Length: 211
Ligand code: AP5
Image (cartoon, rainbow, N blue to C red; front, side):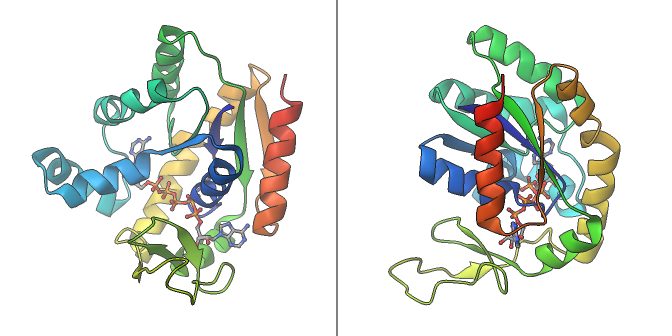
């Protein structure tokens, strides 16, 4: 399985990538997680990209491409969550795939309206111990500390201002990628307003149907 998950912030890309990765053993490659880990490490690179992340702007393409490149090669089966995010990244992905003689099975676009997304993002909590994503109402935090000890934190870029900016950037730069993959007949669109398990089922079904 080699798939790209597209979709606006809060549509559930991370949630679905974690579930499919557990179920199918595909590697979950999240450029957002790579960015946050770099910032947390306190490295010079981390400091140079922190402002982009906090504002909700895209980190420059050349930095993101260098960061994620080694992971593509590491596994035969993967789910890309958060990459590509514009046409130049999509072209870079094509070049990287050609180098490793691999092809994309599908680009799955998770579809949901902006007003629902803001509600999802404001209730999101992430476990610092496991990286698992929860929602205070829709995907409640585990009470059993053996299952996940937490602590469960809110992401720094989940302020209202940053969410709005990330959605703007999504509509301007990332949404047009649906056309990029539709032209190759590998675009699948999934209704992400459904419950979490229904969305997973639809993604897996659409990947199976993909040519
Ligand atoms: P990133 O971490 O990718 O953040 P994002 O794009 O803003 O996406 P989110 O993680 O907010 O949304 P999601 O769709 O994964 O939602 P989730 O599953 O958590 O990127 C962060 C930053 O890094 C960027 O702003 C940028 O600066 C930089 N960056 C990353 N990649 C880059 C790139 N390629 N180029 C340049 N810069 C890059 O779900 C949200 C909530 O909803 C959760 O609480 C979840 O429990 C809940 N939920 C999910 N599905 C459902 C459902 N079906 N029903 C009810 N609740 C649900």
